[in-house]
Image (cartoon, rainbow, N blue to C red; front, side, top):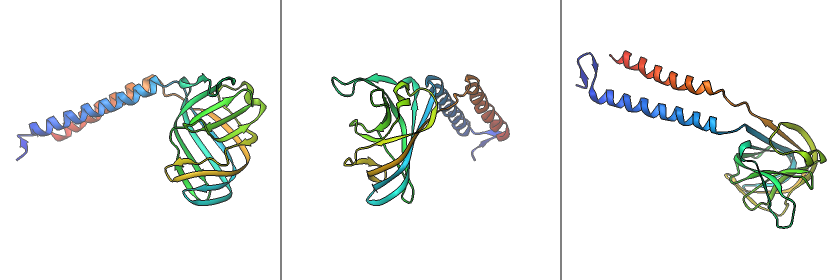
Length: 211
């Protein structure tokens, strides 16, 4: 009923054409994101701590916070009036892993480095620090290169509560902290052409098989 001779029906041909167009748009969009992004970087903060996540307490548990960012968004900003500026970058995605509890997502975070204190850290939209690592090596660090892991002294807001996808997070004690930053490789521009060509070839083959 839906076939016209040996080929596909006009309805099915139109559907395949739309699917092909949508797939190409998605491929182009992904490539555009890759090419407009500078060098992706991953910040990792690790330590042992106590506190609670989503109403569940943890004690001397391993804590890992991983944040993805884009080096093109690093900026020198003045967070506090009359204080030296800091380098800061908005995080694209941030997760926290607490041993024995699980993994949660923290939104609206930023990673930063403070030259005065020699500390790197991650905070929320209120500029409240969640997890900091202090070491003099960070007095000349600008967030845009790989480094570490570097151990240091911990700084955190023991009375602060941070919203996560798994409920509120509170860190009441923190020790044995370290920081690591890793630049991620950027796909070559030619990969975009390969993605587009592959998408086109796939749907071309599919149309032949439908005949």
